[in-house]
Image 1 (tube, rainbow, N blue to C red):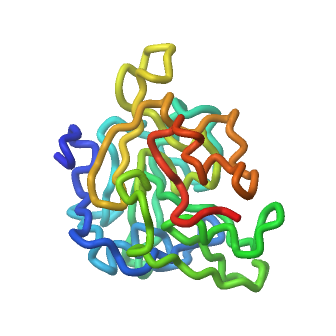
Image 2 (image 1 turned 135 degrees about the vertical axis):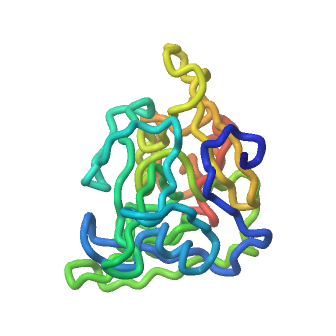
Length: 240
């Protein structure tokens, strides 16, 4: 049990205190880039305690997730109810692997900007994606100081999904609740928030395909919590 939820996050231990700095993670896709995936980063820093054994050695899989492996981390689900199952990620070295059916609050590119932003777009989220390969833009993003972040009870860190949301609303997987219902409000996506609590968020209180998450300035719905329509806030600082 975590935060009163059924055993959806059995191996996740959230820290008592928020980390001073956000987490820098990244990879250029399914590869053997060691110690870069968010599970490996959290495990090495002891924010995440994994009890799994064997191959993969660390297991963080939702009991309600599809029992299928996705080999492309960036594959886009067709809807929030389309469960991509789990993926296997590299750990600290060739001897370690992690399997997970969860995602983190992060962009999926380390490009400098979208629109007219002056900072790397990935900096607006608690998990900062950085692709250090030569083909990536020559930009090293900086993670935000988590003690400066407001609304910590509403900013998700880890949730049902695959790898990271990447500003795709379909990557918030609503695999809980009345899964046969035609109404989004009957589905839930379980999340662990920045303040450490866990909660199931109804599908009608999450971003949808109708939200323009790539808009900038005051009009961006991530700055205003979509004017109260969402139960979550994605960014750790206002997008400008």
